[in-house]
Length: 148
Image 1 (spheres, rainbow, N blue to C red):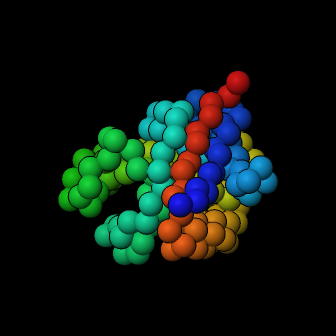
Image 2 (cartoon, helix red, strand yellow; image 1 turned 60 degrees about the vertical axis):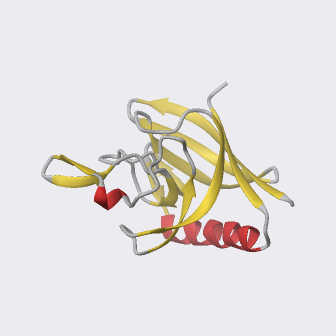
């Protein structure tokens, strides 16, 4: 069985913003944003496909031991008059991390401090690559490295 290793190198932490970049086979594929408080600790995590009821589609789940296997919609907490899921770390599209406390890794092209552009097209390309690797029976692993 082959492995697809994805590396997330965190490059900047400023307040609640954590910026970084993803590389596959040594090639930088996109920039990332995470919420500093809810981001996953440095380490290795398997990436799997998971049908998410919140998004009504299959998503790239970063399998963390803190994750519950039930839908995050069923286990929510209230904050500022809105429902947010408990920690359910996924790789997904997004412009910024403000108000996100679910441990997700947002992908796109950096436009400024804490801001990504082209998140949908970046995510779609990454999603397709990871899906193809998983369909071929490969294991996908995300290696998270903090700033040196």
